[in-house]
Length: 156
Image (tube, rainbow, N blue to C red; front, side, top):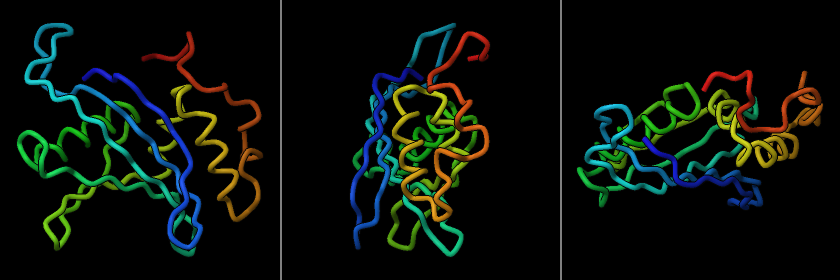
């Protein structure tokens, strides 16, 4: 897997809900040798996070594309592998009644995405802006947290 680009941005959903869109462009395929990607597919994916339910949980959704090489199932596998590689957590994968395959991420995935400077500031701001408790950036340890990106003492 080779990540080509990534960004995070705000959007407005139905009813004025503030959404977080994480966009990632990556080449995903089998790896042969040390760093050679075989049968690679360049895929741009978007995971859209919102706050849902009575506990205001952060939940993100992405949908596998039917027009991707290998169809929806292969696209769902690639997207799931990408999320797991970047966050260290495997997302949930569901087949909906309409045949679409949905990938579902949670707050633990956001924490994994925050390890990357491209996402850190926007995710922190979204968490702060959408928190019911008004704690957001005052979350325990947030003021001492590194300002995104991997650091020398982190193991990649």
